[in-house]
Image (cartoon, rainbow, N blue to C red; front, side, top):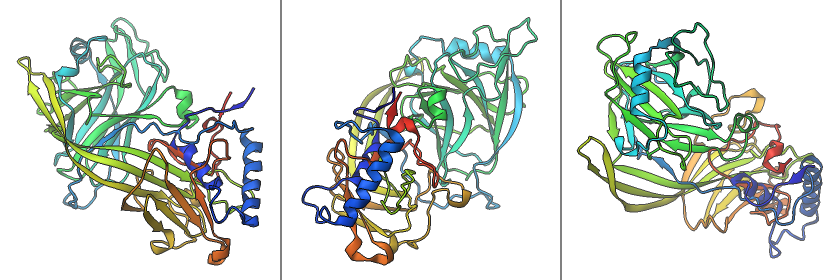
Length: 467
């Protein structure tokens, strides 16, 4: 039997309610047209997603900390101006010596966290290549992503099980580990794997890797809320730089092996995903001495402007963050490993809002804490911004605008949106607050790893309903 979800679903749900619900003191509660619109929206929501539990909260956000580097702010280019994150794809067979070296240095079940510090890399002048080597037996589904300073959209390099296969020493049969929990056998003698060569990234730009992790492949396919983001800037990846060079990697290339954890409660053996990186030289690996830690909610909203609601929740998408800068001090151990001595807050940074999408055709004013932002002061009101309108590509990393915020309280979700009437009619304005439990969501709050929907594509059933 289909039932409405209970309690925490994520930040996305929070945003939806906000558009639907007003406090009793709201001047527009008595507006008959507004009440009619709310009634139509609620009826349509229940028809599509089912009855709403009166205790349902629409704040699904986990407020999990995320890590980033302070942007250089420089215009980073290659000499010919052809900066992009495109990769040339190839294929390689990785031999048993490399696989065995990986097994010896990332033994399953061993805690290897002190073998290397959190790290980032610098883009070299030359090309470099990334090669998946191994995937473990966890049932989680993940994508390996790369963030590069100066490139707007993070690059999805490789997805679990994609074009990957292995064989044992005396077999001619290649077996794919797939997207489930099979993994690659410890008896693997060779691995046939894709290669990704990058040649057009901005030289000397900072870059780092992360896994975007869903609990299962089915969750990924169904766009489940709040996948995890596990970064090399934290302790979720391990870089080992003394890997022997495979025979099919040209001489002169430096080779590193990078192992990844797919869960913060994991065993930290770093063999959930292992990939090789090589170049002449390979991208220099740098320790993370200072890092910006952010706690972010993504608010996604409907504007009640349609007689037939579309539930795509892209009329307003805004990320709001608490941020602080930290310094990390390490002790280098005799075996070449490391130990974190302390992490010290250097300073609190201003709260930040980033507008990611705006799909409605009515003007609106966001109020976050005590700070206001109005669409018409920056953009054409009728323009559909970053919503996939007319099959345009959505850039989930796009910054339509960013601004500092004062007075945002993530626990209180003190965010409202005031939507103008048609033709800017002030009499028809409606102010929507974060929704009360049990109201039909017009605003929802989710983690910033949750993608919004394309124009006229309703949010999936699993955001609101459990089977």
